[in-house]
Image (cartoon, rainbow, N blue to C red; front, side, top):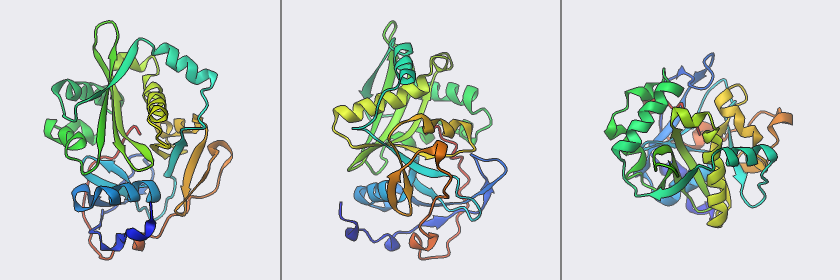
Length: 274
């Protein structure tokens, strides 16, 4: 993909006001965002893969925090990923489940599972206020190729997990995942990511983008366990070993994304599992 084709200064970005960080509660966060329908699918892919943007419902966003750079965009090199003994145990524990591509349509069954997940995993999250239409915005008419993977029990075909992923020119971006409380005991959260790595390998997809690695956030820190991890550093993807890497992430200056002083108070909770 030629970067010369993409003039991001022509895009109508907005910047949020400062809010309490959803990842590190003692920090303030600020995001820069744009509606996914205000750009082409190619631009969406470019911003996500080369600038670390993430999607939440129909908004593409990135962190623009003034005093913190703890959120590190990472991706997994699919071809060189190695299953450790620990990952093999996760696969074995979840061998009673299978996944399949679902139609790109929000269903009541998916939404009820999401509500159950938010209750036991993110009880204080603003996402608990989501209605069905809000959920539909996350999976339908997203402005990019989106896939929904449903995870079901072999025994009774019960829905126990969902992975929402966007497909880009070189990778699979894991937008959001959720699962049942009983399946959580089997480590299904990791199983969902592992199955996406395997799916990407079968589809000859180069990278899996699992989102941010945040050293100080337990639900984000687990990504350090994935081998062949790369981090986005100053617009360049580099090999990354979180346990031994203490370098500060370099961010492209916010002026590269916006040509206005627009301040937009967008108070959605970006407390995502990915």
